[in-house]
Length: 321
Image (cartoon, rainbow, N blue to C red; front, side):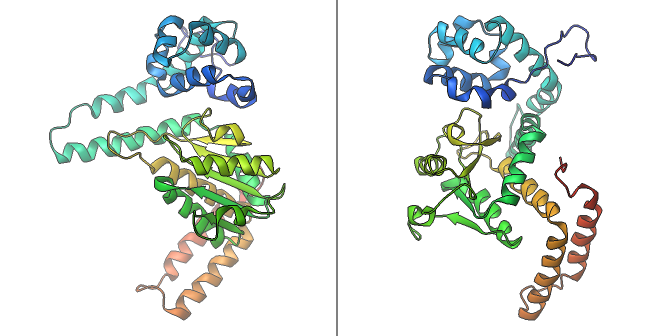
């Protein structure tokens, strides 16, 4: 266990709750998952709540909250709360500054600032909660899988398109699952251990996306999820989960962080197969020139991308992150 050296009043509590969830997921009851979901979504409030008050907020019994702490490996609720407070303190200053700066909105200019700063907050919390090991596992599965199926419906279709499109660009056999187009279940027929299914969904979660991941899990395929929480319905069937924050004060969710994760995965995969990626870029540039695809010549752009990728060659291994 790591000591909080920078602030002596914080004791040796540094275990991130999110890192404990994957191995305990199957042991959690429905009520415990509901309580945990509330904690993950309302960490700032939860660190100050008694077990009684938290149980009322989450709509479960007090015993459920206490038992949740024990299932996660803590001595009791108080022990879990101490870890939550330490984790909260670790990110408090950044989040607090952002929250204060977006409090007052008086005009559309203020609104622009508020929304962008909420996206920054979502990106910051996403970066905080995704472990390098989980990200590395996702990159490894994408790189080594025979076929990659990407399921993202409604609003989640945007990051799904980006992920599927550029995986195909990198000559991966990636298939975007679209309801009513070729019949999703026919496309998934023959799924096996060499395949990977990635589901992208956020509250209120599309039923078909969850069903696709369940089907993939039951047929022995590798399963990954890009979703809002380690206890979302997608996580139940996933081998790895990349938790992404998407909250925004609007009628829509923010997909900024999910698209950023797609960008990171694509860049990491391209570096894992660096020589192939560089060759693809050169061949694509020749094709674009031949077919006169773009208004402006892209030779300088391709050169810039090539130089950037070459600079990452030392990291093109399993120790990418």
